[in-house]
Image 1 (tube, one colour):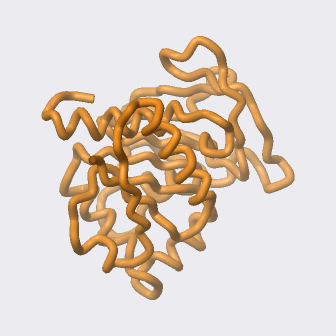
Image 2: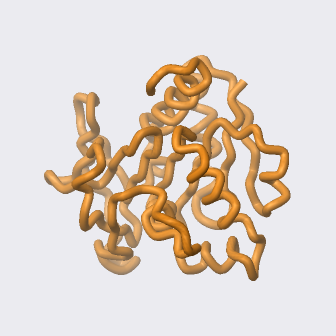
Length: 203
């Protein structure tokens, strides 16, 4: 059984739970979800993958930082120490991977500009073209960040030709919210990557 850590600092966490459960049903893969709220939730180890939901990146840094739950710093360390660990980050989660602000290196090389699509009133649903998927997916962009440099990443999703989803090894970073868009494609990618790591093969 795979154990997926779901960061519970903010954002559409319950929607991610629904999406990962649906993805595990579609892939016939047993999955256990571990809610990550504080440093204590990491101590037992054993995580096969991590989901870092959206929200508001400044709030997430405060809540999960040293003055809050203390979760983010150790979680970043785990990701850096295990470069093969599958990670799915959405919206603000992508900002945290690109710019963790903990004194360590970025966890993905792609660079992002937060809120670059506009304010809350500018949020929209748009057609996202996904690699190896025939038809575009209607996905939600909510105060979304924008990739300003994705040259060293594998682009897996675009909106009008612009990168909105990248993959680096087993790290999937999206500027939109698939969990609010009725698709499990990216959660399936996460599960498949975790299964590949368990088997000792490349995702």
